[in-house]
Image 1 (cartoon, helix red, strand yellow):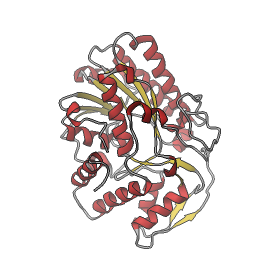
Image 2 (image 1 turned 135 degrees about the horizontal axis):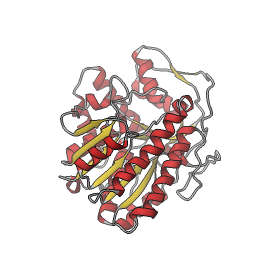
Image 3 (image 1 turned 90 degrees about the horizontal axis):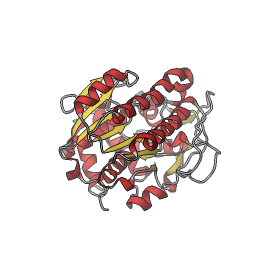
Length: 356
């Protein structure tokens, strides 16, 4: 399968990434290091212990500022020193349940954090390509059985989803008001649920599975019938880099894009737990234990036709591949193996067509 991300394009490119210490940000940094990019990160310290940022040995390979994106002065200082050509915005409060516990912080981070970064762009002369990474949950969820398209209304239900809808609207406004006549290509990418090695977050199904099998306990699945567009983390990471690269070369490619798996890989949480237990082995098992909690969508799927028709993109790894890669990474970690090597191996496999 043709690679739509050109590794040679990224060599020596100055890239500014917010949220670089997170799960998805750490995978992106590892990819960009392999491509030879000059990466500057801006983020809070890694949100978990252990964390992928440390395990991937990224601290000495990229420049980074550990600070809050709500702090405009620190953000602008770091941004101005970096003089980036490409900016990828991933800093966020990303957990739905946490957004119910602290909605004010969620909005401050996800909305005003985006405003602060866009202000840095507005006051900069170096940027040619900007990508705001949001979520599949930005859409008004009608519990449809078909995938949401980029033209559907934005109106996330919970504070996390709604704040990311607001982040989208802020981005649209800045593009129209300030960037349209300045040759700054601006896109947003709305990705589905990601899985992969190195996710240690709370309240996510695959990390919950791993914590359970470590203790030889059954996995507790609180809502096994909810359908989500699960995909391996390298799928959206490579799609983000593709969008940023293509619009850098041709601003007409800029727009709003869904990034998700094919319909056959939009599975229920229970089905995902089944696949995990089968791949993991060692008598791994799960139990259905609804514990209540705040509202979350039951059915969510994306229509990715626009991304496919615009760029010729399509997923490389199906859901079984994604779980297998996640288990491979996790067993390497549990056995004290070399994490940068297993990450680079999986990145190379993905770039080589997705197969081993």
